[in-house]
Amino acid sequence: MNDQERFRYDAFVRMRQFGLDNKGDFPPGSIGDTQFAENAAVVDLLDVESGEQAASFGDTRFAFVGKATARENLRDDLSAIARTARSMNYQFPGIAAEFRMPRNNNDQQLLAAARAFHTETAERNDDFVAYGLPDDFRADLQSDIDAFEASLGETGSAIDSHVEATAEVGEIIRRGMVCRRILDGVVKNKYRDDVGKLAAWLSASHIEKAPKAKAPPANP
Image (cartoon, rainbow, N blue to C red; front, side, top):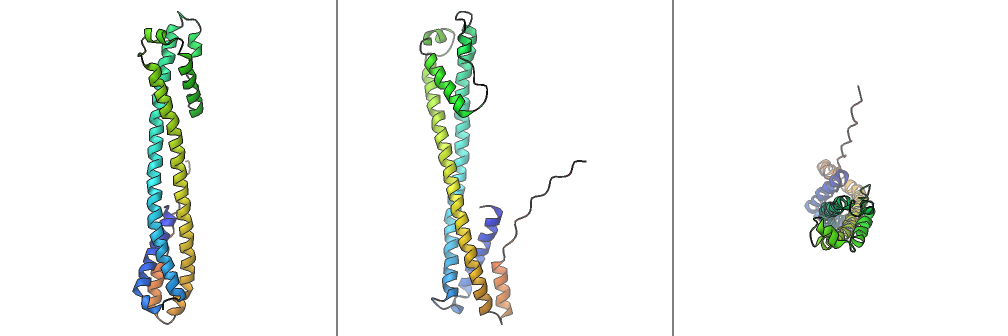
């Protein structure tokens, strides 16, 4: 939850307690009774969904770390092959041009280059090994290609889960705000002659405002 959602959640929790403390003043089936029940349900749902949101955020962060590691492993593979090809260029003219590192860090271009390296090294496997690469360098490359490709899907799934959880929290907050508006009228009418109860309700239902972001200092 962001700051604004958290402040609203805090108000819903206080409202729930107000409803419990004054349950006898709102007969079963009355608008006040049903709306305090709705408010309590909103709090319960937010407890669940905010946990899902936090978990999905952790999953997203973990997925991005995993993706970064997989990308670096793949780049290390390609770099070793490209470096070796430059050494081989004197014996096999033009081979260095076949194994150039991709110019940018675009994931799809990196993956395409890795697949091309894997295919093109097949015919010269023994030559690359003779120039110092491990016997299983192509198997390692394929393994790192698979790992990087899988990390792309995991990142997308984690982002989708986080977006879904965030949307659910927003919808539940909206339900809570509708409930708060209904209860505000009902409670104020109920306690119009009870200053203490009105003050308690105003305190319970008050929603703090999220702090405004500070403007950056002006350049001297």
